[in-house]
Length: 334
Ligand SMILES: C[S@@+](CC[C@H](N)C(=O)[O-])C[C@H]1O[C@@H](n2cnc3c(N)ncnc32)[C@H](O)[C@@H]1O
Image (cartoon, rainbow, N blue to C red; front, side):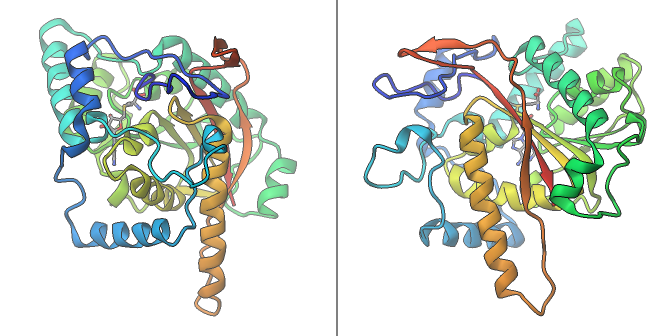
């Protein structure tokens, strides 16, 4: 996913991201992607989803939403959609992409793309494993108080319920399985992705990993997970022509999937760590005001707190500013 937003040439980038578009995307595809403002998908056609979109759009238009950009700070007006929409925000793109990957798998046994590369995936997996093992009761208590559904600090990794949203070929879950996680579920809205992930898991001896077709933005899952992983999915969602609205719906959806005091780990190339923190802050404020409005009707209490981020990614220089091309941030759910 890296490279889905090219840095503006004349901008003051605080955290530049180098492009690393996967090999399967040709130059032609890339230019089509850049021109895809007008592409419409069948995305979000149910009544429930439409209702959520309307609510999210209302939040946007009420001015509660600020484009979470470090480098829009010198502009007078907040910019609503700073991520240039592209084909990568459309389900039709992913369906076509995974159909091709599936054909390649059956013909040549290929696994498809590792988004952000194998090194980033390994780093995310080891760091997540250590974060889960080192999560202390003190950290949890600061955020959640005495929370009954908290994962035990000493709980073995095999007991953690893990969900990978927008799992693609599911390789991230296979890597987590190698580290000792065992209760693993992957979801994706593309049937081809789930088909590919199931085939790869079976071939590699991980048939116990569960894979389900599910659109995160209108999720049918009614389970909560102690660890939720997102590698490139929020990025993809943000590239939909209605990206800013979809990102609001994303936070509502994810808040329902992360168990109280569970962890959400987001790996992104389109937002910096600070931009993600700002986005979460806006979500928290929105939840707080909803709770206040709903007092007496029971509060939702589903806000996130920053827990930690990966500090070891290689950095690059861009426009005289140092930064890394991806960021990984963990949030603890209250
Ligand atoms: C950049 S790919 C990353 C795939 C995988 N996480 C990885 O790291 O290899 C983004 C993935 O998000 C999925 N996706 C995008 N929007 C989604 C949605 N609303 N619900 C479920 N999956 C979605 C796409 O089908 C795609 O597999």
